[in-house]
Amino acid sequence: MPITVMLLSLCQALLVSGNILLIAVSPLIGAELAPTPAWSTAPVATQWLGLMCATIPASLIMARLGRKRGFMLGNLMGLIGVVIASQALIGERFFLFMSGTWMIGIGIGFGQLYRFAAVEAAPFALRDRAIGLVMGGGVLAAFFGPWLARVSREIAATPFLGSFLGLGALYLIALIILSLTRLPPAAATHGEGRSRPISEILRQPVFIVAALSGLIGYGVMNLAMTATPLAMANAGFHFDHVATTIQWHVLAMFLPSFITGHLTARFGTTCMIGTGCLLLMGSAIASQFASGVMGFHIALILLGLGWNFTFLPATGLLTEAYRPVEKARTQAANEFLVFTTVALTALLAGPLVDRLGWSLLNALLIPMSLFPIALLVWQRLARRGQHPHISG
Image (cartoon, rainbow, N blue to C red; front, side):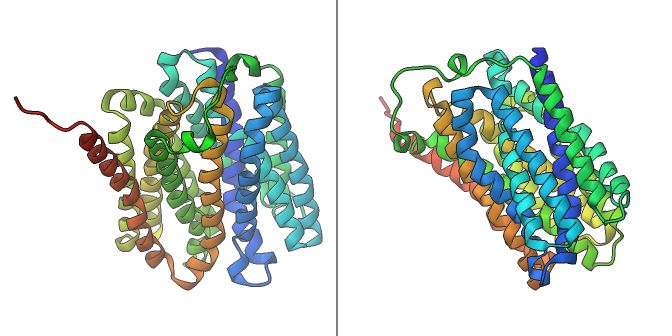
């Protein structure tokens, strides 16, 4: 595996560490600063909104300037967001804090393309394994992110200010690593020639399955994950319990990445996505019966595994939907669809857990989790219809 993929994995670890820190503290900051409890997850939603806004520009910028410059630009955006959020915490200004998380989300939007850069840096035969290795950087983040959230929370006189100083340090380290990383130029990865209309690309069954599998897997996971800190706080659990639960969740999200590529190559994308959907459903069912801290642990572990087995195979499948010259627009369309859904789920998490409660919220996720399976069955039946059996 090329050293470039290893460095991208480390950058991914830093990115996810920051994301975990934000997941752990942003809803709690929102609960303190927001005018009403229903707005408590709004800072998380604006973070995902920033990510959504970055999806299309990030892909197009990298097609013109290259991956390396694009990733460095994203980290600079994240640093600007950290400065804004820090000022908001000092002044206790809720809407300014939302502006800061929006800018951080833009930076994260650029970083979400690390997995596609890994595909370009690795031989085709190692495509799925390269994706898994880069996403596996989140294993380090599963331990480092919650630890950073705990130790940085009370460093400064202003609550949670130290958390954002730590976040800024992560972005600075990523900038240094990227400056030492060699990535192929845009001309070598995006190709030249005639490109099909984007509508034709989006109508392909392979794109529909890849995009909707990633969309559902990430959306279901994010809705439950964003609601977890609030649900645990409402149940009277200490912040350390929240951080530990998120830690186990993120470990379940990323630890399987080291073997997901092998499993996908052996059992196929359809089988892996179907398994991921069943795990997402299992998480929602577990939330109905399990109680206490262990109940949250079980539900969030299954949730993380379900995300891994849907999102990573969907990423590999997406690479079959475009030619090199169509790469930027197709990836942009996929990222926009996926992270628009993620932004909406983050925005809805606060009101839903406040009005419906943890158990009912998860019950609504069961039919959503089954949708990609229904789509895969539909695709298989459509293929059989196109190739009728002819008996002699």
